[in-house]
Image 1 (tube, rainbow, N blue to C red):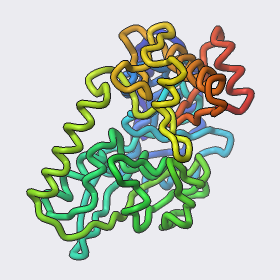
Image 2 (cartoon, rainbow, N blue to C red):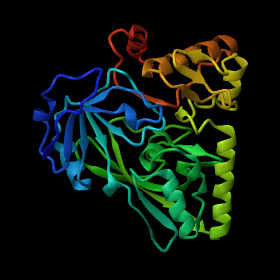
Image 3 (cartoon, helix red, strand yellow):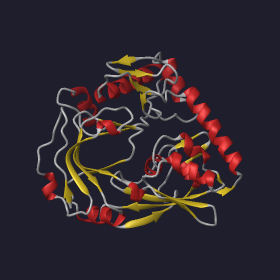
Image 4 (spheres, one colour):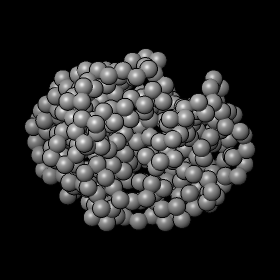
Length: 329
């Protein structure tokens, strides 16, 4: 087990000692590891302990032997996540290169590790003349994140191409589960939050490389024209209510361009939040909650967060703490 010294960073810190309670590992454990720079918003507090497993077996052994009272959170590329300013208690797991492999078989099945970028999976499929996975190029995240929220874009959803996913449970068991077994629906997966996705088998079909790449170019162009991808942003803030568009509800409530602290609803696409440069995580979350309130007052519809929010607020952020106590997490 390699235990690195705490990472120097101004701001909140956790008391030392958790790493001494954790199981032995061949990976790296880093107490008080900064996380903000890993997120697309560029904000957030530290991990009490950051764990980077050496490989799949190292991760399984760690989970199997981790004390039950220690919370465990998995972090991908944090493209659709707010890490609160007080940081994340317990262990934050960051999967590395061993979990980012992408392979294929002769039946147009692509097997991708949970840490593989959605874009890289789409590019691999294109090179191998496997069609049906192009929509993944429009999702800014990893396969693990796509499994967690049944991510979708441009006419496709993860469940549409998923054969099965290898899922690690807190007791150390690994199960191959189908979309039906996971009850995957619109931006939803019914599995508990404490499971960890290891990999996925994705079903493609025979295709022509030039046609596949042309479709991916079309997605890239549409995304660039309609989303604020050149800013510090996340993915879509709110899920679409059935039969409706979240962005229209936000717009009709007068929230396009709305500013709270250093956070703003995008003028280009008002279902995206932006860190204008000096936002805190609390600014971004307050902005989202302000929009939800105004939309509810205007339309009677309470929008559901699509962005995942983890960690604890700072002591002074009493309003965010109140939301967590109300169960709105």
